[in-house]
Image 1: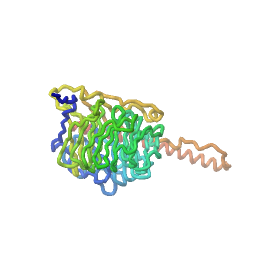
Image 2: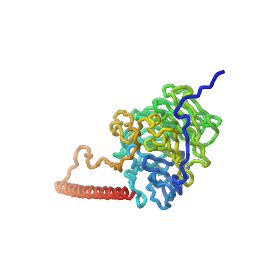
Image 3: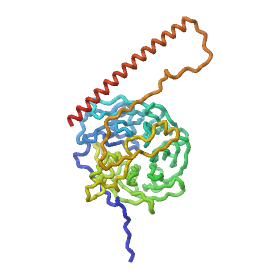
Image 4: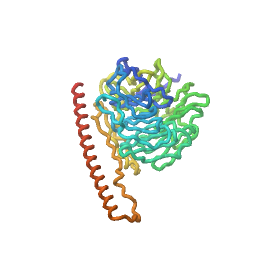
Length: 471
């Protein structure tokens, strides 16, 4: 008699549980925009949610500890003139978040550690380069201040947020609307999905499509794709019979999927959230009331179904906490922030263990907040893996770090040399005097601005100390 061998895995019993009612965030008017983004972004300090807003676009930023009912007058981040479609926290600065909007702009914001008294309306910088709505944002995983945006104009732009400049513009790669963009682990390649039903792998610095697969899923609904830790690709899509699918691909052989899982028949686009440390992919469908999760391994059948977390209410969107924001003392391996119509509810995934000791096998070193490269180093062709940190003693977010934008000074750009126009001596002396006056004024203004900046920084530091003291 043959006995069925049960596959050994430490993640076979991952247990999902919604947080208690007092740990949720209540009375938040979650955005009703029909756009397939997660509408939520979270890091170890803050929770950000795109909200309904009259006369423009807005999102709310709450400290993680501020659970319970949110005051209806709680300050928002406002500045866009049309609905916000996507938000993304900077992986190298927990106080910096980028927002993309229907108004064709991207804005980058500095969020203070203290609760602001009024709406935040002034971004650090506004990035303008798209001609249609901007619906996708993604920070570079290892290079400082490098941000990717994709718009309805079928263009991908990679920005240096520190200078406000366009580093790269990929404008002839996609013939139709881009549905998703994902960096690989060191930020050397992009995986994109498009309305033309093609999955592409792009080298952005060479401006080349390295590999592509037409119709990885036969259905008509949008695709999504993410890189795995070993460079393979996970894609979600629909079969011809509208069954939702998860496929694993090897970019070196795009003909057939390494593995293909069929799930159910539903219209909701599956948003994949991949954890490289545990090699688990979590699938959250818009409008679903469940989260399915699968373990990806090197052995057949490669994609192993683990379990499904189910709840009663459908999800409007979903935020995924970076590994450094988890509670390692409770063997927490993932945390989601599920958006309802009027609230946000944390969902905690744990691996039950009897021991209270730190579980090395659950928590390998994970990407920390330090960038491995500067923007110009990455642009010149350098690659580096993320700078890893240990979670053995838990992670404490660093204090407020300010993002400074240094735009190139147009006064430093000399006019092109060429034949000079004849000019009278009086005109020359007059223009020289005017120039000197202007330069003096600019110098005085610059000194005033620097003095005010120092005063603002000092006041903010005092406020942070007062808040810390009251805590």
